[in-house]
Image (cartoon, rainbow, N blue to C red; front, side, top):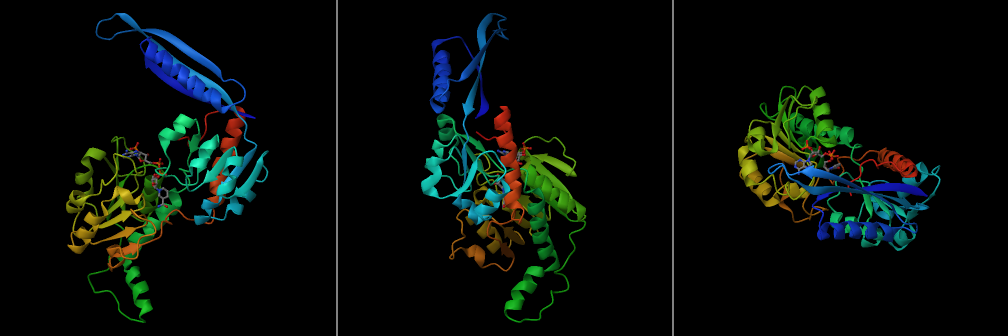
Length: 373
Ligand code: NDP
Protein backbone atom coordinates (compact mmCIF):
# COMPACT_ATOMS: atom_id res chain seq x y z
CA UNK A 1 0.00 0.00 0.00
CA UNK A 2 1.49 3.35 -0.98
CA UNK A 3 0.25 6.89 -0.58
CA UNK A 4 0.37 9.71 -3.05
CA UNK A 5 -0.63 13.28 -2.49
CA UNK A 6 -2.41 15.24 -5.18
CA UNK A 7 -2.50 18.96 -4.73
CA UNK A 8 -5.07 21.14 -6.40
CA UNK A 9 -3.84 24.69 -6.02
CA UNK A 10 -7.08 26.55 -6.61
CA UNK A 11 -7.63 30.25 -6.37
CA UNK A 12 -11.17 31.33 -6.86
CA UNK A 13 -13.88 33.52 -5.45
CA UNK A 14 -16.00 31.74 -2.88
CA UNK A 15 -18.82 30.96 -5.26
CA UNK A 16 -20.87 27.99 -6.29
CA UNK A 17 -18.74 27.17 -9.34
CA UNK A 18 -15.62 26.79 -7.30
CA UNK A 19 -17.28 24.56 -4.73
CA UNK A 20 -18.55 22.37 -7.53
CA UNK A 21 -15.00 22.06 -8.95
CA UNK A 22 -13.58 21.10 -5.58
CA UNK A 23 -16.25 18.47 -5.05
CA UNK A 24 -15.68 17.00 -8.53
CA UNK A 25 -11.93 16.74 -7.86
CA UNK A 26 -12.62 15.05 -4.56
CA UNK A 27 -15.00 12.57 -6.20
CA UNK A 28 -12.49 11.80 -8.96
CA UNK A 29 -9.90 10.92 -6.33
CA UNK A 30 -12.28 8.89 -4.19
CA UNK A 31 -13.36 6.83 -7.18
CA UNK A 32 -9.83 5.47 -7.64
CA UNK A 33 -9.40 4.02 -4.20
CA UNK A 34 -11.20 1.82 -1.71
CA UNK A 35 -10.45 3.98 1.30
CA UNK A 36 -11.73 7.54 1.24
CA UNK A 37 -9.23 10.27 0.42
CA UNK A 38 -7.88 12.36 3.21
CA UNK A 39 -8.63 15.82 1.94
CA UNK A 40 -7.32 19.09 3.33
CA UNK A 41 -8.86 22.32 2.10
CA UNK A 42 -7.03 25.51 2.93
CA UNK A 43 -8.79 28.89 3.10
CA UNK A 44 -7.41 32.41 3.29
CA UNK A 45 -8.68 35.89 2.77
CA UNK A 46 -6.96 38.20 0.33
CA UNK A 47 -7.26 41.81 -0.78
CA UNK A 48 -8.10 42.86 -4.29
CA UNK A 49 -4.90 44.57 -5.50
CA UNK A 50 -6.82 47.38 -7.29
CA UNK A 51 -9.60 48.22 -4.86
CA UNK A 52 -7.97 47.05 -1.64
CA UNK A 53 -11.26 45.32 -0.71
CA UNK A 54 -11.11 41.96 1.02
CA UNK A 55 -13.13 39.94 -1.41
CA UNK A 56 -11.87 36.54 -2.29
CA UNK A 57 -11.22 33.35 -0.51
CA UNK A 58 -8.11 31.52 -1.68
CA UNK A 59 -8.32 27.74 -1.62
CA UNK A 60 -5.94 24.90 -2.02
CA UNK A 61 -7.11 21.30 -1.87
CA UNK A 62 -4.65 18.50 -1.07
CA UNK A 63 -5.82 14.95 -1.13
CA UNK A 64 -3.74 12.08 0.12
CA UNK A 65 -4.90 8.91 -1.51
CA UNK A 66 -3.60 5.45 -1.03
CA UNK A 67 -2.52 3.58 -4.12
CA UNK A 68 -2.13 -0.12 -3.84
CA UNK A 69 0.69 -1.15 -6.21
CA UNK A 70 0.88 -4.90 -5.99
CA UNK A 71 1.62 -5.69 -9.62
CA UNK A 72 3.80 -3.66 -11.98
CA UNK A 73 3.78 -4.67 -15.65
CA UNK A 74 6.61 -4.00 -18.10
CA UNK A 75 4.72 -3.64 -21.37
CA UNK A 76 6.01 -5.50 -24.43
CA UNK A 77 6.37 -2.19 -26.34
CA UNK A 78 9.61 -1.45 -24.44
CA UNK A 79 11.22 -4.12 -26.68
CA UNK A 80 11.85 -1.39 -29.28
CA UNK A 81 14.56 -0.11 -26.91
CA UNK A 82 15.49 -3.07 -24.67
CA UNK A 83 14.08 -6.53 -23.82
CA UNK A 84 11.34 -6.31 -21.15
CA UNK A 85 13.13 -9.00 -19.10
CA UNK A 86 16.13 -6.65 -18.61
CA UNK A 87 13.91 -4.24 -16.68
CA UNK A 88 12.01 -7.03 -14.93
CA UNK A 89 15.34 -8.49 -13.74
CA UNK A 90 16.64 -5.12 -12.55
CA UNK A 91 13.50 -4.65 -10.41
CA UNK A 92 13.28 -8.19 -9.03
CA UNK A 93 14.10 -7.11 -5.45
CA UNK A 94 11.15 -4.69 -5.24
CA UNK A 95 8.43 -5.65 -2.76
CA UNK A 96 5.86 -6.13 -5.53
CA UNK A 97 5.21 -8.47 -8.43
CA UNK A 98 6.99 -7.28 -11.60
CA UNK A 99 6.17 -9.07 -14.87
CA UNK A 100 6.66 -8.63 -18.60
CA UNK A 101 3.15 -8.19 -20.01
CA UNK A 102 1.32 -7.99 -23.34
CA UNK A 103 -1.74 -5.90 -24.21
CA UNK A 104 -4.17 -8.42 -22.70
CA UNK A 105 -2.59 -8.18 -19.23
CA UNK A 106 -2.55 -4.39 -18.77
CA UNK A 107 -5.84 -4.42 -16.85
CA UNK A 108 -4.40 -6.83 -14.28
CA UNK A 109 -1.64 -4.35 -13.30
CA UNK A 110 -1.71 -1.41 -10.89
CA UNK A 111 1.22 0.26 -12.66
CA UNK A 112 2.79 -0.14 -16.08
CA UNK A 113 6.18 0.79 -17.59
CA UNK A 114 5.78 1.33 -21.30
CA UNK A 115 6.89 2.90 -24.57
CA UNK A 116 3.47 2.93 -26.27
CA UNK A 117 0.22 4.29 -24.91
CA UNK A 118 -2.95 2.17 -24.81
CA UNK A 119 -6.34 3.27 -23.42
CA UNK A 120 -6.35 0.13 -21.24
CA UNK A 121 -3.56 1.81 -19.23
CA UNK A 122 -6.13 4.28 -17.85
CA UNK A 123 -7.15 1.44 -15.52
CA UNK A 124 -3.71 1.63 -13.91
CA UNK A 125 -2.92 4.07 -11.11
CA UNK A 126 0.51 4.90 -12.55
CA UNK A 127 2.09 4.82 -16.02
CA UNK A 128 5.86 5.27 -16.43
CA UNK A 129 7.10 6.20 -19.91
CA UNK A 130 10.55 4.82 -20.80
CA UNK A 131 10.97 7.85 -23.06
CA UNK A 132 11.53 11.46 -22.07
CA UNK A 133 9.11 12.76 -24.72
CA UNK A 134 5.52 12.06 -23.63
CA UNK A 135 3.75 13.69 -26.58
CA UNK A 136 2.02 10.36 -27.36
CA UNK A 137 0.08 10.42 -24.03
CA UNK A 138 -3.37 12.10 -23.64
CA UNK A 139 -2.64 14.42 -20.70
CA UNK A 140 -6.22 15.60 -20.15
CA UNK A 141 -7.69 12.10 -20.14
CA UNK A 142 -5.01 10.91 -17.73
CA UNK A 143 -5.77 13.88 -15.47
CA UNK A 144 -9.51 13.15 -15.63
CA UNK A 145 -8.95 9.48 -14.82
CA UNK A 146 -6.46 10.33 -12.06
CA UNK A 147 -3.79 8.19 -13.68
CA UNK A 148 -0.30 9.38 -12.80
CA UNK A 149 2.22 9.74 -15.65
CA UNK A 150 5.98 9.89 -15.08
CA UNK A 151 8.72 10.01 -17.74
CA UNK A 152 12.38 9.10 -18.14
CA UNK A 153 13.95 12.50 -18.59
CA UNK A 154 17.42 12.73 -17.08
CA UNK A 155 18.95 9.56 -18.54
CA UNK A 156 19.67 10.55 -22.16
CA UNK A 157 22.13 13.44 -21.90
CA UNK A 158 25.38 11.53 -22.46
CA UNK A 159 24.07 9.04 -25.03
CA UNK A 160 22.35 11.67 -27.18
CA UNK A 161 25.30 14.04 -26.67
CA UNK A 162 27.69 11.42 -28.05
CA UNK A 163 25.34 10.59 -30.95
CA UNK A 164 25.18 14.28 -31.91
CA UNK A 165 28.98 14.55 -31.66
CA UNK A 166 29.12 11.51 -33.97
CA UNK A 167 26.93 13.23 -36.59
CA UNK A 168 29.01 16.42 -36.45
CA UNK A 169 32.28 14.51 -36.69
CA UNK A 170 30.91 12.42 -39.59
CA UNK A 171 30.06 15.57 -41.57
CA UNK A 172 33.30 17.36 -40.70
CA UNK A 173 35.64 14.38 -41.22
CA UNK A 174 33.54 13.07 -44.17
CA UNK A 175 33.04 9.68 -42.49
CA UNK A 176 29.51 9.30 -43.91
CA UNK A 177 31.07 9.46 -47.40
CA UNK A 178 33.57 6.74 -46.51
CA UNK A 179 30.75 4.50 -45.24
CA UNK A 180 28.70 5.13 -48.40
CA UNK A 181 31.74 4.50 -50.66
CA UNK A 182 32.52 1.19 -48.99
CA UNK A 183 29.32 -0.30 -50.41
CA UNK A 184 30.69 0.30 -53.93
CA UNK A 185 34.33 -0.56 -53.01
CA UNK A 186 35.12 3.01 -54.09
CA UNK A 187 38.45 4.60 -52.98
CA UNK A 188 37.62 8.29 -53.02
CA UNK A 189 39.22 10.78 -50.61
CA UNK A 190 37.31 14.01 -49.89
CA UNK A 191 38.03 17.05 -52.08
CA UNK A 192 40.72 19.32 -50.58
CA UNK A 193 38.19 21.85 -49.23
CA UNK A 194 35.51 19.42 -47.99
CA UNK A 195 36.90 18.21 -44.66
CA UNK A 196 37.10 20.45 -41.60
CA UNK A 197 37.51 20.13 -37.85
CA UNK A 198 34.64 20.82 -35.46
CA UNK A 199 36.88 22.52 -32.89
CA UNK A 200 36.24 26.26 -33.18
CA UNK A 201 32.83 25.85 -34.87
CA UNK A 202 29.59 27.07 -33.27
CA UNK A 203 26.61 24.85 -32.47
CA UNK A 204 23.25 26.33 -31.53
CA UNK A 205 21.28 23.93 -29.32
CA UNK A 206 17.53 24.64 -29.26
CA UNK A 207 16.12 23.23 -26.00
CA UNK A 208 18.31 23.27 -22.92
CA UNK A 209 16.98 20.40 -20.79
CA UNK A 210 18.68 17.04 -20.24
CA UNK A 211 19.30 16.50 -23.96
CA UNK A 212 20.43 20.05 -24.67
CA UNK A 213 22.85 20.23 -21.75
CA UNK A 214 24.17 16.73 -22.52
CA UNK A 215 24.83 17.77 -26.14
CA UNK A 216 26.43 21.04 -24.99
CA UNK A 217 28.65 19.18 -22.54
CA UNK A 218 29.99 16.69 -25.09
CA UNK A 219 30.41 19.26 -27.88
CA UNK A 220 32.06 21.72 -25.47
CA UNK A 221 34.66 19.07 -24.63
CA UNK A 222 35.48 18.87 -28.37
CA UNK A 223 36.19 22.60 -28.60
CA UNK A 224 32.82 23.60 -30.07
CA UNK A 225 31.38 26.95 -28.97
CA UNK A 226 27.83 26.17 -27.86
CA UNK A 227 24.94 28.62 -27.75
CA UNK A 228 21.51 27.73 -26.39
CA UNK A 229 17.88 28.70 -27.00
CA UNK A 230 15.38 28.44 -24.14
CA UNK A 231 12.20 30.06 -22.88
CA UNK A 232 14.12 32.35 -20.56
CA UNK A 233 17.61 33.75 -21.19
CA UNK A 234 18.90 32.51 -17.82
CA UNK A 235 22.48 31.31 -18.43
CA UNK A 236 23.46 27.68 -17.94
CA UNK A 237 27.09 26.66 -17.31
CA UNK A 238 27.24 24.29 -20.33
CA UNK A 239 26.42 27.13 -22.78
CA UNK A 240 28.64 29.98 -23.94
CA UNK A 241 25.68 32.21 -24.78
CA UNK A 242 21.90 31.98 -24.27
CA UNK A 243 19.05 33.24 -26.47
CA UNK A 244 15.31 33.37 -25.77
CA UNK A 245 12.89 31.33 -27.94
CA UNK A 246 11.65 34.58 -29.49
CA UNK A 247 15.17 35.17 -30.87
CA UNK A 248 15.42 31.72 -32.50
CA UNK A 249 16.14 33.08 -36.00
CA UNK A 250 18.93 35.34 -34.75
CA UNK A 251 20.37 32.50 -32.64
CA UNK A 252 20.57 30.01 -35.52
CA UNK A 253 21.69 32.49 -38.19
CA UNK A 254 25.39 32.34 -37.37
CA UNK A 255 25.79 28.71 -36.29
CA UNK A 256 27.69 25.97 -38.15
CA UNK A 257 25.32 23.42 -36.60
CA UNK A 258 21.72 23.86 -35.43
CA UNK A 259 20.57 21.11 -33.09
CA UNK A 260 16.94 20.51 -32.05
CA UNK A 261 16.53 19.11 -28.51
CA UNK A 262 13.15 20.59 -27.51
CA UNK A 263 10.08 18.62 -26.49
CA UNK A 264 7.17 18.50 -28.95
CA UNK A 265 4.38 20.74 -27.67
CA UNK A 266 1.72 22.93 -29.31
CA UNK A 267 4.23 25.81 -29.20
CA UNK A 268 7.18 23.90 -30.67
CA UNK A 269 5.34 22.03 -33.47
CA UNK A 270 6.99 23.00 -36.82
CA UNK A 271 9.18 25.62 -35.15
CA UNK A 272 11.85 24.65 -37.72
CA UNK A 273 10.02 25.85 -40.82
CA UNK A 274 10.96 27.46 -44.15
CA UNK A 275 11.78 30.73 -42.37
CA UNK A 276 14.13 28.96 -39.95
CA UNK A 277 15.96 27.10 -42.73
CA UNK A 278 16.25 30.36 -44.69
CA UNK A 279 17.80 32.00 -41.62
CA UNK A 280 20.50 29.31 -41.38
CA UNK A 281 23.83 29.67 -43.17
CA UNK A 282 24.16 27.81 -46.48
CA UNK A 283 27.12 25.84 -45.09
CA UNK A 284 25.32 24.92 -41.85
CA UNK A 285 24.04 21.48 -40.87
CA UNK A 286 20.71 20.81 -39.13
CA UNK A 287 20.39 18.04 -36.53
CA UNK A 288 17.09 16.75 -35.09
CA UNK A 289 17.18 14.43 -32.08
CA UNK A 290 13.96 15.80 -30.54
CA UNK A 291 10.73 14.80 -32.33
CA UNK A 292 9.94 14.75 -36.05
CA UNK A 293 7.08 17.20 -35.76
CA UNK A 294 9.21 20.07 -34.41
CA UNK A 295 10.28 20.25 -38.07
CA UNK A 296 8.18 21.10 -41.11
CA UNK A 297 9.57 18.16 -43.11
CA UNK A 298 8.59 19.38 -46.62
CA UNK A 299 10.28 22.72 -45.80
CA UNK A 300 13.43 20.84 -44.77
CA UNK A 301 13.40 18.82 -48.01
CA UNK A 302 13.04 22.04 -50.01
CA UNK A 303 15.92 23.67 -48.14
CA UNK A 304 18.13 20.62 -48.84
CA UNK A 305 17.14 20.49 -52.52
CA UNK A 306 17.85 24.22 -52.94
CA UNK A 307 21.21 23.93 -51.10
CA UNK A 308 19.94 26.50 -48.60
CA UNK A 309 21.64 24.39 -45.92
CA UNK A 310 24.60 21.99 -46.20
CA UNK A 311 22.89 18.88 -44.85
CA UNK A 312 21.08 17.27 -41.94
CA UNK A 313 21.35 14.45 -39.42
CA UNK A 314 17.90 13.18 -38.48
CA UNK A 315 17.04 10.67 -35.77
CA UNK A 316 13.30 11.43 -35.60
CA UNK A 317 10.63 11.94 -38.26
CA UNK A 318 7.02 13.00 -38.65
CA UNK A 319 6.24 9.39 -39.64
CA UNK A 320 8.29 6.58 -38.12
CA UNK A 321 9.69 4.33 -39.49
CA UNK A 322 10.64 6.85 -42.20
CA UNK A 323 8.60 5.72 -45.26
CA UNK A 324 10.60 4.15 -48.07
CA UNK A 325 9.36 6.81 -50.51
CA UNK A 326 10.61 9.73 -48.35
CA UNK A 327 13.01 12.00 -50.28
CA UNK A 328 15.09 12.27 -47.10
CA UNK A 329 16.65 8.87 -47.92
CA UNK A 330 18.11 10.26 -51.14
CA UNK A 331 20.46 13.07 -50.09
CA UNK A 332 24.20 12.34 -49.80
CA UNK A 333 24.41 14.99 -47.08
CA UNK A 334 21.63 13.57 -44.92
CA UNK A 335 22.31 11.00 -42.21
CA UNK A 336 19.20 9.02 -41.21
CA UNK A 337 19.21 7.10 -37.93
CA UNK A 338 16.18 5.08 -36.70
CA UNK A 339 15.18 7.01 -33.53
CA UNK A 340 18.05 5.54 -31.54
CA UNK A 341 20.10 8.60 -30.49
CA UNK A 342 19.48 7.76 -26.83
CA UNK A 343 20.11 4.01 -27.09
CA UNK A 344 22.65 2.40 -24.78
CA UNK A 345 22.81 -1.09 -23.31
CA UNK A 346 22.30 0.57 -19.91
CA UNK A 347 18.91 2.01 -20.98
CA UNK A 348 16.79 -0.63 -19.19
CA UNK A 349 18.66 -0.41 -15.85
CA UNK A 350 18.65 3.42 -16.11
CA UNK A 351 14.84 3.40 -16.45
CA UNK A 352 14.79 0.88 -13.57
CA UNK A 353 16.50 3.41 -11.28
CA UNK A 354 13.69 5.95 -11.84
CA UNK A 355 10.99 3.30 -11.31
CA UNK A 356 12.71 2.01 -8.15
CA UNK A 357 12.99 5.57 -6.77
CA UNK A 358 9.32 6.24 -7.48
CA UNK A 359 8.15 3.00 -5.86
CA UNK A 360 10.08 4.12 -2.75
CA UNK A 361 8.50 7.59 -2.97
CA UNK A 362 5.02 6.09 -3.27
CA UNK A 363 5.73 4.08 -0.13
CA UNK A 364 6.76 7.25 1.69
CA UNK A 365 3.94 9.34 0.22
CA UNK A 366 6.47 11.73 -1.36
CA UNK A 367 6.09 13.55 -4.69
CA UNK A 368 7.18 11.39 -7.61
CA UNK A 369 10.36 12.01 -9.63
CA UNK A 370 9.72 13.12 -13.24
CA UNK A 371 5.99 13.45 -12.71
CA UNK A 372 4.24 14.84 -15.80
CA UNK A 373 0.53 14.33 -14.92
P1 NDP B 1 13.70 17.91 -20.52
O1 NDP B 1 12.37 17.92 -19.91
O2 NDP B 1 14.90 17.62 -19.68
O3 NDP B 1 14.00 19.29 -21.20
C1 NDP B 1 13.16 19.91 -22.06
C2 NDP B 1 13.55 21.39 -22.08
O4 NDP B 1 12.85 21.99 -23.13
C3 NDP B 1 13.18 22.06 -20.80
O5 NDP B 1 14.31 22.20 -19.99
C4 NDP B 1 12.66 23.41 -21.25
O6 NDP B 1 13.69 24.33 -21.07
C5 NDP B 1 12.45 23.24 -22.72
N1 NDP B 1 11.03 23.41 -23.04
C6 NDP B 1 9.97 22.87 -22.50
N2 NDP B 1 8.84 23.28 -23.12
C7 NDP B 1 9.24 24.09 -24.05
C8 NDP B 1 8.58 24.86 -25.00
N3 NDP B 1 7.24 24.85 -25.09
N4 NDP B 1 9.31 25.62 -25.81
C9 NDP B 1 10.64 25.61 -25.73
N5 NDP B 1 11.32 24.91 -24.84
C10 NDP B 1 10.63 24.16 -24.01
O7 NDP B 1 13.60 16.91 -21.73
P2 NDP B 1 14.81 16.14 -22.42
O8 NDP B 1 15.91 17.08 -22.65
O9 NDP B 1 15.07 14.87 -21.71
O10 NDP B 1 14.14 15.75 -23.80
C11 NDP B 1 13.72 16.72 -24.73
C12 NDP B 1 12.99 16.05 -25.86
O11 NDP B 1 13.93 15.30 -26.63
C13 NDP B 1 11.97 15.01 -25.41
O12 NDP B 1 10.72 15.63 -25.17
C14 NDP B 1 11.94 14.05 -26.54
O13 NDP B 1 10.96 14.44 -27.46
C15 NDP B 1 13.31 14.15 -27.17
N6 NDP B 1 14.16 12.99 -26.89
C16 NDP B 1 14.65 12.26 -27.96
C17 NDP B 1 15.48 11.18 -27.76
C18 NDP B 1 16.02 10.40 -28.92
O14 NDP B 1 16.41 9.25 -28.75
N7 NDP B 1 16.05 10.95 -30.09
C19 NDP B 1 15.87 10.74 -26.40
C20 NDP B 1 15.32 11.57 -25.36
C21 NDP B 1 14.50 12.65 -25.61
P3 NDP B 1 13.39 25.83 -20.65
O15 NDP B 1 12.41 25.78 -19.53
O16 NDP B 1 14.71 26.35 -20.28
O17 NDP B 1 12.83 26.48 -21.85
